[in-house]
Image (cartoon, rainbow, N blue to C red; front, side, top):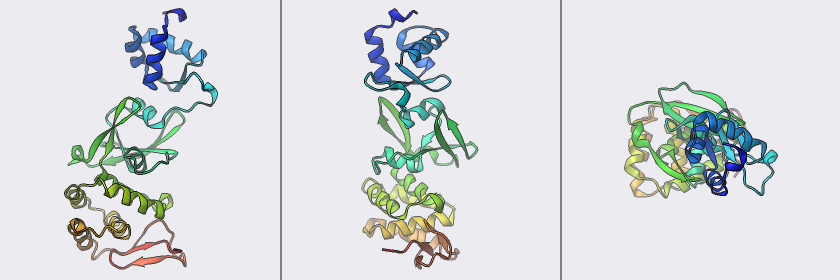
Length: 262
């Protein structure tokens, strides 16, 4: 397929796709994958595509300089890793509309994988390993750029946010995230997530965040009571702060040391 055979309609289709693989390109243009790979090379030279990584490309808007163009990180990671992974933690927070910030690191989760950090082109991806049991009930679908992405549910995302290490936590942002997610949270599903979480540190932080965010609604009473009883004999844990900081405060209900200064 020579350059002149790529029609205006083809280019519009590529633009709508935003991020696509060599297989996607072959399907769109009705050709073979080897031919699509050669065509991708030609389109990159023309500034119409930019390479995310081998076999994954992003379409470049006609009014944008290809050298400064950065693909949508969620679409790029989705195309690179496939549908076996679910966007989670801070990435889920953004995709669920609870936060506008797109963080530098993309978070994904899946059962049966090794927790690690890997590169997808210029993007850093933190892969989290999760238990297989009950996993299928903890994610939903969110549409972005013409794709339906798998994203952890608001209930699971609340638990995941409490699991982040103190060095990457922002206390005030965490409270705002919890307030936003609670508006779309199913209390029974949240209770199920809590019951399936055996990590006392995560439960203590979650209980504190729920209470500190103003979550005093009667329907959350069972959730808070479950957490309170689970951490009754646990040691104090830190959240979004460092040990021995003189501004630290202590939540005796959930045994959480958290930042002061307000």
